[in-house]
Image (cartoon, rainbow, N blue to C red; front, side, top):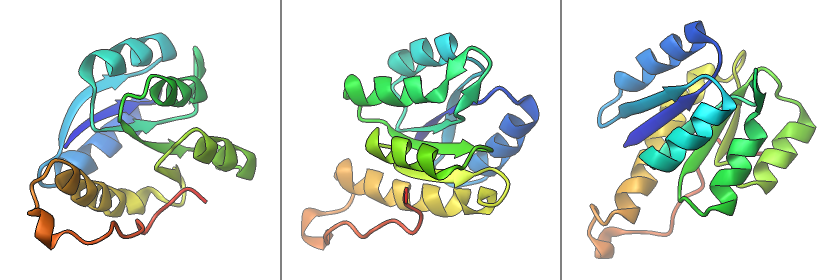
Amino acid sequence: MRIFLVDDSTQFLDRLKAILVSLEGIEVIGIANDLPEALQSIRAALPDVVFLDLQLPSGSGMKILQMIKDENLGVNVVVITNYAYPQYRKKCAEAGAYAFLDKSTDFSKVPQVISTLSELHRKARGRIPPDSMTSPSEPKVRVS
């Protein structure tokens, strides 16, 4: 699964990337630190998943989430932020975020979210025979 990271903290990006690349079948295909770079790079790379911070120095990550939805890019977005307020959760859910994680308290859930997304991605790509598919189960970590 191809993953793109959007955050302005190099330290956080290094930590997140280390977790992700340790997981089987995961490839981090790009990193952006600001809004314009992220918008352009996501359109060009078309990753399977974007890990997205909401607070960027050049604008809101909500613009990226909305662009992904409006342009129907088929990218799953995992919002991971220090601003895990209920109003942000609600806006992200409405804009189509797959999951909403608090950097401080939910970082340990990243492998679980990726595992669920990987399973959904395999089913969507037809890597599991159709007769063995069951209805998609609810992911363990969802936008609430």
